[in-house]
Image (cartoon, rainbow, N blue to C red; front, top):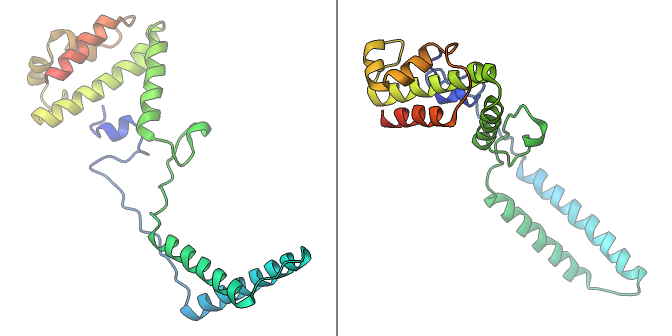
Length: 195
């Protein structure tokens, strides 16, 4: 039984709160000021030529000085917006392609996954014993560890007193329990919440 906690439960890539691997921060290379100014001047010049040609094609004219001033102002606004923009959102890893977008919420996808598992476990006792009970056991161990500084493996006698006989026997002998009943799960969760 893993003592890693909720990170293991929700699939945080195999890391636990005790064994967290620090990733190095991305190095941001900055261009020199001269290169930036030359690049902006080229962009403004090309935009001025294209806009002037487009306006002359429809028999309109605009002062070249006014056009360049407008384009310089536009570049300054774009630069200011980039300077105050928030950092990019972290890319979330997901096993399903539909939830792999930048707005995916790892906790929400984990909850959905367990809702599906619980729905299927209602009719499949083997799935209940394979998927639901181990998660209840991990949650119970995590709750015991956080509230009382023990787990079922480190102090079984004290854990059994805290959990009660019904939850203890369901977690200790998962093969004995066949079928998932809503009232049983409610009883188990009530016992876990009382911890």
